[in-house]
Length: 246
Image (cartoon, rainbow, N blue to C red; front, side, top):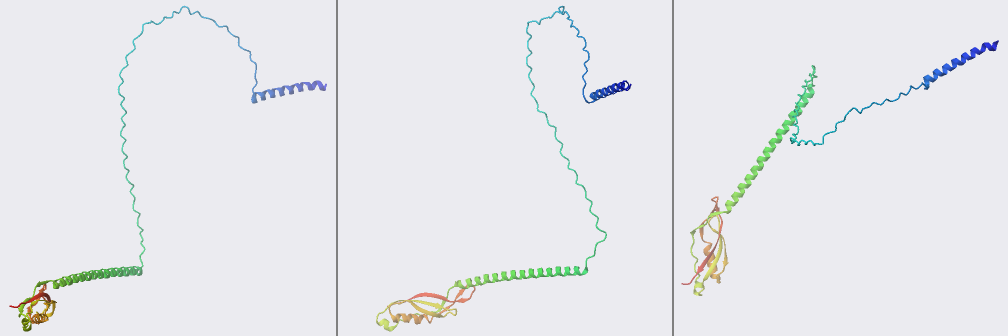
């Protein structure tokens, strides 16, 4: 009795299990079901012989002559508009603080004193520089004047002129001995017009004639020579003194 009652339950469980497996296969896999194929229809042929095909005529059609092609004009570039300078942004000045700290009076006083000291030092240096330049210019002027004075003193503008020129005396002993010749003397006339020095530059060959020429020259008097400043100056001469028997 129990086995007959349990068989329907088993079949029911098997049916439910089969349905569950089939549903899972449909969800997770592909189940191929063989469907019946549709019947194959036979192709029907249509008779197209009633259509007549016209052949093209053999006459050749003239080819059109090529038309001259117009020159290709390059595209004109449109002018690029210049960039307009943008105005610079106007910066507003920052507002000054309403409260300005006051400077220390002692510091201001020291700064003013230092500034005044610098100005005094600069003024002193400028004065010294001007004094130095003036002194240098004065020294240069004095040197120029001294050189000009020296040159003027050395330049004689007028020669001495004779005041008293007695002729040398012919020594009697030399005359008796028949001695004659020329004595060349070199002498210097001082600023007073007197002969301050004299010597024999070339002897006549006779001592009597040489001494007579020297004694005569030393007694001569002249107006002194003058330089460019008008001062009396010394002047040197070389003078021949002849002695001839007559």
